[in-house]
Image (cartoon, rainbow, N blue to C red; front, side, top):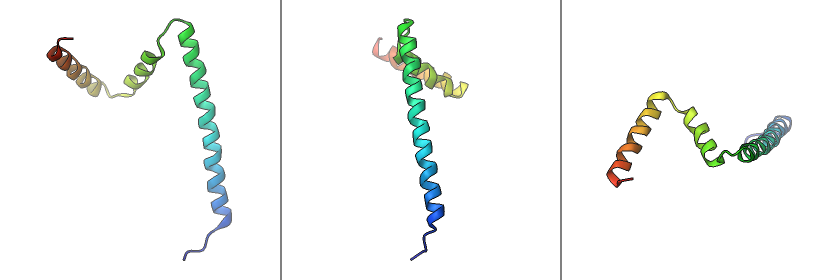
Amino acid sequence: MKQIDNAQLLSIVQRIERLNEDAAQIATDIKEIMAEAKSAGYDPKYIKKMVDLRKLDPDELDEQDELMKMYRDALGI
């Protein structure tokens, strides 16, 4: 069985804990911004969708748009 380096393990755990705290704070910040958007009359569901779409490569976005149009046309919507 491998020997455990206590200091290294503690360092790893502490770094993960800090990142989890940061992630929780970021999630809180995002919720506050979404509440701000909603109070300004924006729909948070579509704000989230726009954030996701902006992550896509332009070609991937075009492909997604084309497929969505094709499926909507096929379903008459």
